[in-house]
Length: 410
Image (tube, rainbow, N blue to C red; front, side, top):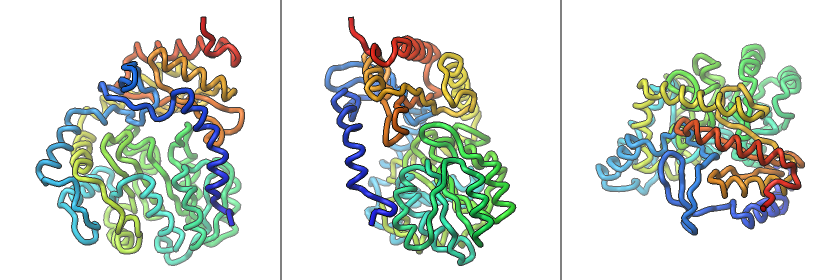
């Protein structure tokens, strides 16, 4: 028991974190949207900028995507087919998957979330169905996203599992030498900042036939031609020893998730997934509004507007990096982790920022290591320079007070 998952223990560890953030007024805040990442609290009308939004290009409020979502629902007259995609599907679903496949030059299938994409992909890989019927040693990066680590019990019924330290290439290569087939599970860009050593992993793939599964939730749309993300941009082109899962409701600005099962022409893999992967077969698919937004966003990704938004995002990242020092400075990605250290000080800092008009929730153990509490900041293309400058000035001023005085009131 509890070799890979212990819900009771996890709940016990996390309880204090959620209790503290809820008591501080930083958990589950009901809001109304004001556009461009600004919100108004329902309870007291307090307005603030969301500094922790995953919509890195601001596409979640793009008029073209919103209008396309509404038009799709009105055209079909239904939010979904209320049936498994294996039985019935709106033509819109096929259109959206074709658009994604053509945009990224892959064979893509969609699911209703990035977590469902992990649930679909991991057992398929572990079973050997994508590795010539050889069940691989499944190696997880310690920092791989929770949605992948949570699948370990299912994966363990198909293959042996090993977890290695974050970005430990030496340990991974040793395992590649010792086993006929290895599959490595990692994030392309990690949710608390930083990226996988993609070029080095591709070298191991060439040398040992390493199979790679990347969670690319955080860099799709923000980086690369047509918003291909850091993995595909580094690879140059998709290959048949890689699977990539992506979010469509972060940088892409729409809804749901997708799985890139291989290069164009990998129809056999698509058929295998559609006939063998329970979440893909039976789980709810992206609804009609989401599919309309996916199609609109895919179209936008082929225009100069995407390049303009990517450039704006890079300008905002550069501005933030010039004002606040973080371990991620200069990596060109939108996630920044501002380490505070003290859990109590971090919560009070987040409270002060919210009062001043900026929402940047604290994260600490077990999301981050003990004694390393901090703020996770997500930068967006639709932030103004004035907002970033004011936010950074507040952070620097509050941090200079020290962990005891942070949040001190006159």
